[in-house]
Length: 341
Ligand SMILES: [Zn+2]
Image 1 (tube, rainbow, N blue to C red):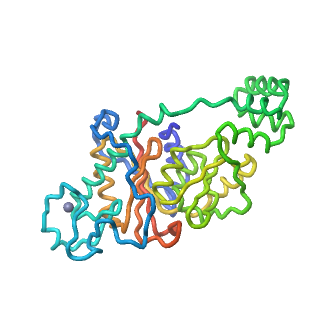
Image 2: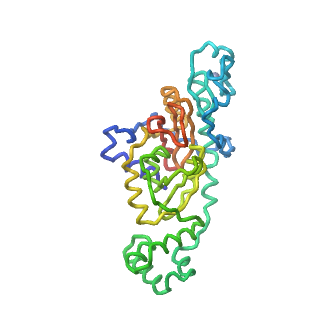
């Protein structure tokens, strides 16, 4: 996904300058001209996703911080301040359940997290699996005839655009449900229902930019533990994993019938989203600086960093979350574009 392209589209959005809640604020960061060094092998190979799988909001942060009493320890293992921080009056910020005693320690924690996130980047492209073409799946199931497939492929080729499934439905009278079922077989996933959709209630699942750029649609939260995330014609498992790590909810993905998806997705984009800021950083050091500034300013009670394709997503909880999803005003998002490398 060429995120830069999407980001620029976003930048042209007429709403951008109005600074409405949930709309993007663009910032350029750093004037460094050197290329970012994310891909240059920073020596961090740990691509495991080290966040706690369950949020545990009732608990104090893992290493306590000021919340746990006087003998708080800084989460930065290379913290140089020793016992000095005991005299510092800092109740925050908390990053990935760890309290940091100073802006310097916050910046070191963020740098380590950025490197961790960038570590697994290459392996993603390798793991992309070959998929049986949709037309062949439908033919194999006996849902279309060879003649219908040929006609749809010809029409698609002549038009130079459009998805095969759309051609089959709109011009050859194939039932939309069959196309969605075939997509489900192709992606080996469920077809999810969309009976009742609470767009506003789900607007804190992920930033508006990701919903728009990656064609995702949060569908519902079940039993306070499972989040159903819908897609139109292809799953985005990287996004799903990022949402799972960020929210602490188990994410189940599936496809939604095109006609239902389109209207619900459009409505979702009108919902009221948490404030978010979009940042372009020209180097890792610029990125660390701007994220440190954001975390130090917001003094969040929790914050987390995950990667979504070519973006890093920092979410800061300015108030403790009650329930499976945060309220709109309880979180702030920072999305960092990592360039098109
Ligand atoms: Zn420290």
